[in-house]
Image 1: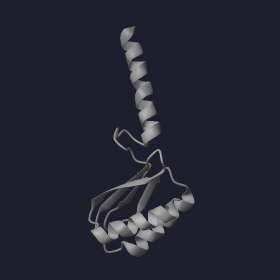
Image 2 (image 1 turned 60 degrees about the vertical axis):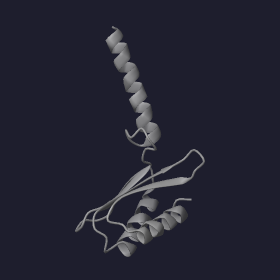
Image 3 (image 1 turned 45 degrees about the vertical axis):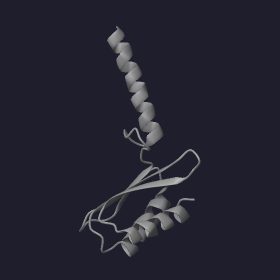
Image 4 (image 1 turned 120 degrees about the vertical axis):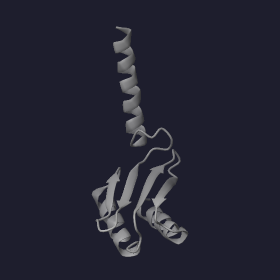
Length: 107
């Protein structure tokens, strides 16, 4: 009986972490993810409206066309500050351009 109660509580805690952080990353979590692989379309997923997703795809297609594989994970702090984590083939100027665009687009 105690094992079932423990499993139930663990499920609730994991469900809350998933809901609050957009995934199972216990750190900042991801509110949204932008992914690109060479030869594929830009994928945008997460807590964004369809309009925001389309704007981001259009921006990436227009301004990051020469980039290889990358992922951009974004979340907001409780004070609504946008935090971004980058992976892959984006240089410093591309990262800054993405940050500027997302700050305008998502506020």
